[in-house]
Length: 189
Image (cartoon, rainbow, N blue to C red; front, side, top):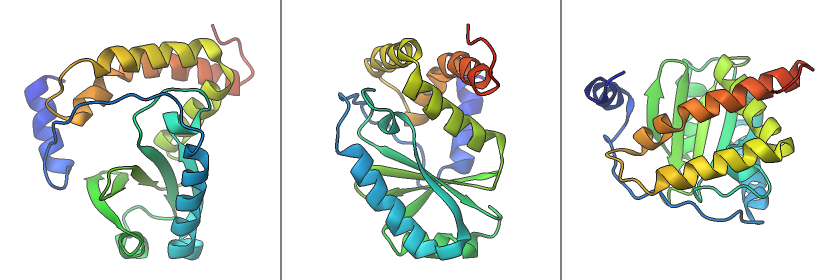
């Protein structure tokens, strides 16, 4: 997809428009898991049984992996289109809707230190988030590759944060291939 087409797509799904910010990659912070656990509890308390699962995902969930200082959470709800079941409760704990796209919502805190991804059960995206996290926790080689890629890309200027994420996609797909093979008990290389 070309840059102009991607910008048009982003304009349609981003609440508040595109954002240009410097990408900061920091060394792993030992407080990220406890911060994620605290947020997970807030999410679970606010949603009750509407939250089928709440998981810490992304680079901050992988011990030793440098990351943007933004903790990603994954919340699975029965029906992503039933926004009444989860949006107001999540907004009541300080989260604001940032992305509304087919099959995916993303909310974030005002301080931009948490991104909460909401999905329906057993979507490919949910499986990928968990496979990537779990594989990076056990594969030092792919963890190093991913960190190196992020640090290299962070040195660039991006017209929108999503362009940085898009630039990582080839490496993420390579790592996900290893993760899927590992999950299936097959060779990873």
